[in-house]
Image (cartoon, rainbow, N blue to C red):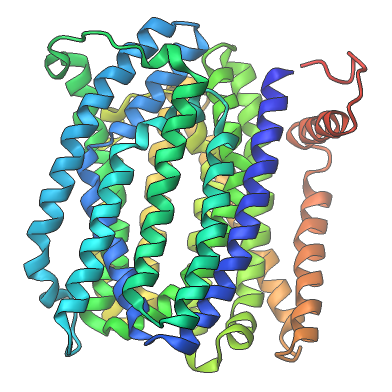
Length: 514
């Protein structure tokens, strides 16, 4: 019962928060395009990508810490959880310093990543330094958020982040309208993230003071198991981040900073949609981590099948909606001059589908560890991503980059399923992969039918409204017919009834039984 209540609370807060942030983000982007040089969006997107790549110098410490916290907190080993936190708190100090030094070392090479002639390199370097310093501060405090996630209190962090981001969105609107200064705009974004990280650290310490008691942990970096886990996780971290490097940096170097800016308009909406729907599943990860470490494999597999069906239904709806609504929405919100080819939209929709659908297997994969066993899959995914993207960009332009990302995601998916099926579910790998590919084909068919039905609708507010209704009705109706008699669907409906009982504050012990 407690797991269900925590998951529901975290999901409700996360979903509401991301919806508000998304609406404010679209409004701010419209103000930005009207008042600040469009190419600045390209700089922002490029620098964010560079920092994501530099952040791989955390060597996957976050994944290892989260896995360890799941294990220790679910077993009630508070002492061991505290020692893990002390070890990783020290590690993050060195990580923050390494990221700062690496970021500074990259500055002279920015000229090679930006094709266009830049009239004010001082502005470019200032923007980059502001983003770098803010990023270092957030990375240093990352482990406090992981404590809340592993303790099923992610809603605490999301509440803080939502309040600050909304507040700073208002600040950014004032900055745009009054000063039109991109430096102040960037500073507001960075301060929002930094203040959120600081307040999350304070909340984490106040909620779990026993986990932050000082204790000497000698020779923490010499522990063989610690070094082995970090080494294995770092390979995954480096290779998984290759997609970020390939996407934006390759677009900037080959197609130019304006293409990055156009790309950022789509990712503003697409990323917000992904984060919004992942917020439905992410809070469940704390409950799933606790469940996976306390229940039998069959029960874990049953829970995974339910979460996987929820993830698929969300992902198929998102794929259909993006391919149907993206171009009309961009046209109405920002203007037809900001459109990219429809082939890009389809590729980006598939990328978003895989990110959402695979979040279900990722939740359970992260409860296992065993990072060394996934190394070959991670390296293969990175190699395919780079090779296909380089070939694709010469053949199909920006769409080719996304084709490489989709191919890489499909390979990474196999690695996640391999670890989870082998060490958590003890289920056949092939059967689960075939089911996942069948889901992808079904989602693609739903998308194609919906796009054909909406093809003749006008690009107007009314036309978008009709498209929304069709996107909402058609894929969900098909999924209802296909899955209504499956065990996963029956369990999902039982879980939904349990949540409704929580909302209505019913006390029937049979209805609320685990």
